[in-house]
Image (cartoon, rainbow, N blue to C red; front, side):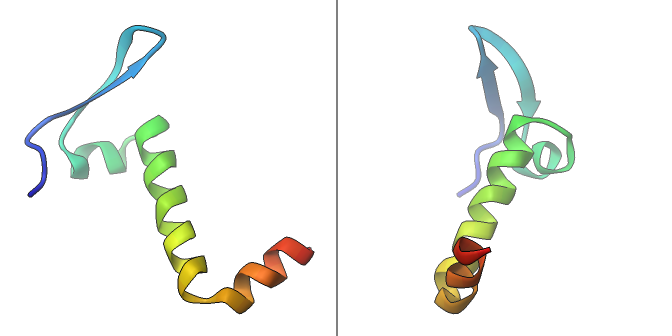
Length: 56
């Protein structure tokens, strides 16, 4: 189940606020974190790509 609202805090202040779809489209920490997780999942599914990335 997705949260109806996500609040991203930075340095004790609200930096971003919205649902997943909204935050994934906005430039900011949430989108960067989400993209990083997607990349990590893709690399976990393809170990040979991970080895090439590490060797580069």
